[in-house]
Image (cartoon, rainbow, N blue to C red):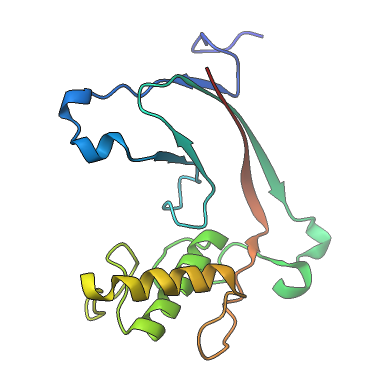
Length: 179
């Protein structure tokens, strides 16, 4: 198969090594675990994306396969809950331009955290008037995030978040190998 531009490695295969200047890393950074998160271009990385750990200076091989999904046209007349997915522009979120299940879950977690703690983590989407938790309130948002993740994705008022997948989606099948 003639591919342009010419490829030095097989399709669906990536090899890279992250080699920072170790002397520039603070001592505490050397012990931290770093992760790679794969997400679609129209998404931001959220706690709901799968993450893959890696070590600095270690060669890692990623075998990546993108699998696309599209709803059968005969199901488009059904409600979102009956077909178990949202069509494009069928569901709007407050803080994200495009709907994805990860964005919906993250926005719902933010709302839950605000209800429980009266503030949100600095990295959560928010309005300008929403208080950001300070260090004393950090335990509250950590507990809220953990409780939300372990429970049924509802707010304190038991209002379901109704976060469904999109009817047209791309999922990544990733296999990680290390030397």
